[in-house]
Image (cartoon, rainbow, N blue to C red):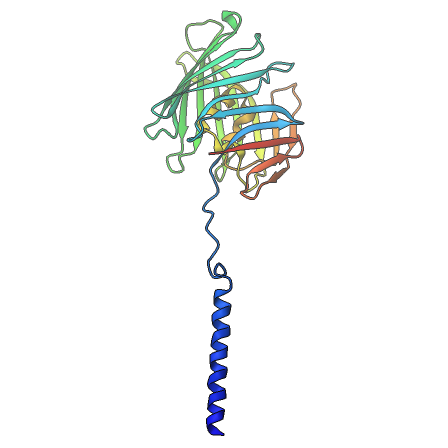
Length: 291
């Protein structure tokens, strides 16, 4: 009986071993981990639309995503007109941006940019604004100031030759206020230069552009060069929020009297990478291109 007992016990162990072997080989892929998809592809903003009508278009190179041309609304024109900004590079740095409107009555802007040694900041710049007559044309010289600790842009001083005058006679001072990395206000002071060529702040007229209550998600404009949006914002300072890494949920613009202050709310939907895909209040849709 003892012998039979051991025979039965060994037979049971052998049977269990056979079951185990069958279970581990019945699905050979079961023990292989899912392949790693890797990081998501880098993306760049391609289009901003409203009701399927294009509002902004950005043409970039296929591999590196370098901005080549950008089309955006001409705010100075009462009707439907758009500026096309053409970008020129030198040694991979933006050195020229020219804005031409589809409205022939609008000004043409050409910015010549000198980057700093790192190529990440603008050291200084000049611009020529051409109008239909010499009196409407402007020549500008820009000096950029950065915080030595944070490297944030804190001031742009623009000295202007207006009305065909050969000497600098007017200025615009752009002063930046931040919360973290985001621009929350730009104070624009526009006035006359004194006899020494320095801003006479006593003559200044003030405009304030406030960008409030930023979210913690990715700005679509952060995928494109900051230098482009700085130049575009020197035409229309209401666009300075586009140099921020996040998205404001309201904007408050105070222009000199008799203009009435304007407050604009913004609300967003995001994709699974944290990029804005819809701005709900203005019914804007953002489309990206993968690189």
